Amino acid sequence: MDFNCFKAYDIRGQVPDQLNPEMAERIGRAYVAVTGARAVAVGYDIRLSSPQIADSLIQGLRAAGSDVYSIGLCGTEQIYFATSHFQLDGGIMVTASHNPKDYNGMKMVGPGARPISSDNGLIDIREGAREGVPNAARPGVLQSLEVMTPYIDHLLGYIDRDSLRPMRIVVNAGNGGAGEVIDALEPHLPFEFSKVHHKPDGTFPNGVPNPLLEENRSATSMAVLASGAEMGIAWDGDYDRCFFFDEKGRFIEGYYIVGLLASQFLQKSAGGKVIHDPRLVWNTRELVSSARGLAVESKTGHAFIKQRMREEDAIYGGEMSAHHYFRDFSYCDSGMIPWLLVAERLCQSGQSLSSLIDARIDAFPASGEINRTVDDPAMVIETVERFYCRDALSVNHIDGLSMEFRDWRFNLRMSNTEPVIRLNVESRGDQALMTQKTETLLRQIDRLSAPVPGQRDAITL
Image (cartoon, rainbow, N blue to C red; front, side, top):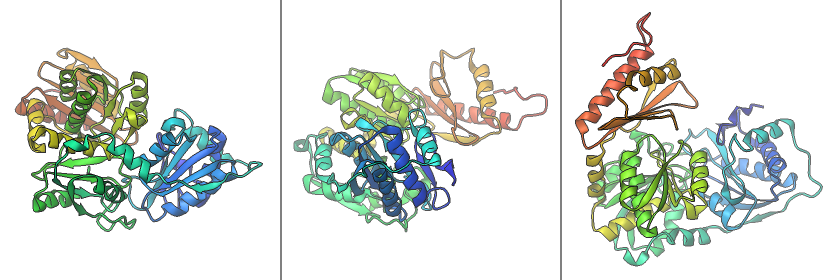
């Protein structure tokens, strides 16, 4: 059996070579043995392999003595919600999110929907699955759990419905699971939805839903323009991330959505803490400060953000990768709460989404994340730091290398899984400066990845 499907934060692998019914059953047994869970929620996404893998997972959980509360077809955030709302011992979502359609996986949480990763149990679960776990004296019971009704009620609690007005919105589920939630929300909202790739379909007839890929954005963008919508939203397959398009059909970088949501939440709560990742920060810091909040930087990644949110009792956390976390959602990420809040902001402010975002782009233009494949990422980052350290006003290593100067800053970090470094650059109101600094850094990175013999550490402007 191939146990390489166990990753740092979840389980993900090809079906059936890495993840199959036998592996799923073993994982279920090991989950109970490691966590001691006696009541576990299980759900699955729209992939064709998901129902069978979920059935085998349930068999393993029950054989090891845990009762199972089956949600059936759902999104990852519904597992988070069910685990917390019904005070269960844990939850497991069968999903491979935006991976190719021949992949599947699992996301695991414990009590209170706390994530289970390689730092707190996932490695032990892997070893338990490898060694095998015997049957419990009493097998667990399987029962269905109706989650949609309380989940929809919870989502609606984030917005003031009396302040909403009729508005046309394009929604693109990408043939994933988000469409069913939109259908359940629709009777409670004054919005008119233009639905794109709405029907769940595990064959992914329009491609695997991953709006981070530029080639996957045109369907939403064109539908916004064709329908005259005020906003477009697209989701990944298990809809724990959502992506925004303004009324011009323009894709909005997730960085600017973090600041928008932070200010919206802080206005509702009259202050509080906001957690953000270190890749792009100045826009978020300014908006949080102006709304009487405190911005707190955290290492990138859902396990780190969620843990820091709990430590700080933060009301909201956001990553530019389109993960948004909410204290009242058990500090977990949701792909539904963000768009409801943005829609509320448009209704209350009377402004267009483009005008809200353009003001922030003008104030803090950013490069967006740029990836470069290099032979030695650590050497490249170390050399770049040495070159710029004399002029930097501040340097931190919370996640990779962040260096700030008077009018610009950058973050350079390594991928956890491949020889890639990721660059983000921003400036204070100077698009030309941001572009120039980005191009200079990319030239330096390219030069270091193919150095002249004997000049490995030499970079110049």
